[in-house]
Length: 372
Image 1 (cartoon, rainbow, N blue to C red):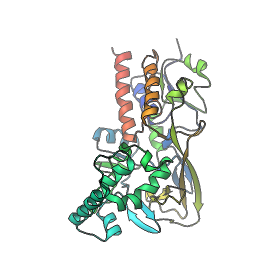
Image 2: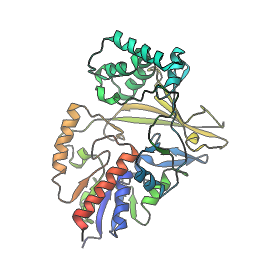
Image 3: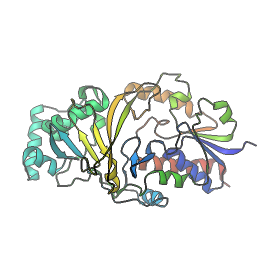
Image 4: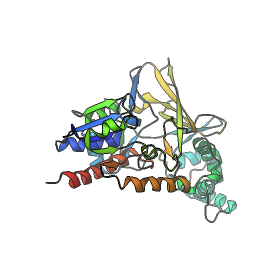
């Protein structure tokens, strides 16, 4: 007999939720992670008594009550509402695009006048069927909003002209004709009280975890440890890049401790000018309504991804999706290994989506392999 029923590669949300489900039915799990900590990209560090979002801002939101109750069963969440700001040429704008934004830009308070102004700009642009991100954005919010708050930020984020980016990236752009700065429409929203590490610790409670262990470097050893494997790492790396490497965008973070109690007055501030090298500044204490005497900020710099860097955003263009489909066809034939999560599915997930996906796949896995 192998010492474990299931080996789970990766201790991010997907792997942790899967492990928890297996523990609930008494299965022996080993969770491994190549990083020195658990939690994947939701990991938090502590500085100046502040929970630092080590891999960028993570704001939990969902309209699914079952998912909300699930995460709150491990740690209570606070009432943080995501209301980011944007700065362009020194002027501050509210996000998402709403009546506050339109008033700041045009001085208009009447929603009908705003709609007329946007419609006039769209008509002048002559866009019938959007073929790229630029045309899609202009068709939704007109040229002024696009030039001020979308173009520079997006081109920094993706490292390409908006004319070269697919329209679907921005198709669900939030646009409201009410004075509402809440970025998300979901019923439930917040940050775990005490940080996301408490959520990960709750999910992995009483489960054996080994960090600093790279499955791909020790595959023969770990394959012998369990009857089944749940793999949440990069799917192309699993197959030694047989069909080529899948493309991503990466991020570089510059963190700074400031000996003041408040730097920008908001957790998230975007910088939409292309000339400003970073896309946004996070001030972490504001995610938890902190009163600490000092503050910590993080500047986010998008960058081209190279092997060895952290892969953050999959580039789901036609070429990469075709390459991924080749890897997926192999993965679907694996007799012992189940693939899931952001990197294995080559898909950007919000946290509530990856949790829901893991719970569904775990139920299916249990029914298939352990049903009485």
